[in-house]
Amino acid sequence: VLATDAWWGRAVLEVEQPFHPLGQAGPQAAEDGLDLSLFVTGTPSYAEVLEARAARVAMVRDFLAGVTPEKLVVVRRNPWSPQYPETTLSCVHVILEEEWEHHRFAVRDLGAIEGSPGA
Image (tube, rainbow, N blue to C red; front, side):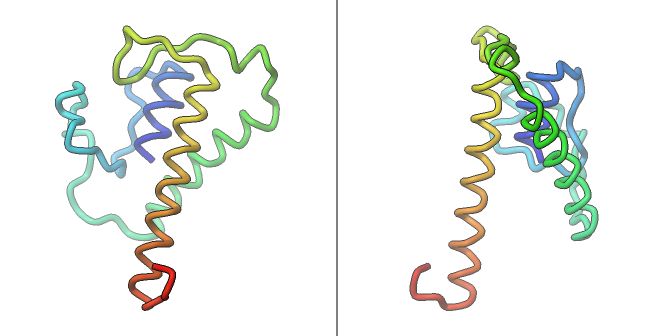
């Protein structure tokens, strides 16, 4: 949720405060200027997490359904380091890389829990 909010909401859509309260900020977030009071500290319900996640997936999916080469080369501000420009394509790449890494971690961890030999 946080990666999509930063790289899609802040960088591509240019929303000043795009962060959902359920986002999980990393340890460096405060150093990057992120107001940690935006985020809940308790454990959300599974339904709340699914809802927040589904909304972000839909935003990116809708964009990708109609994207053109011209839209992908638009220069955006890096959400964490505005002095380093990014293209829309590079912002999408960050989101997809984050999705892939989280998938890998989930598969690994679920495999370990289940005692899978591939974990």
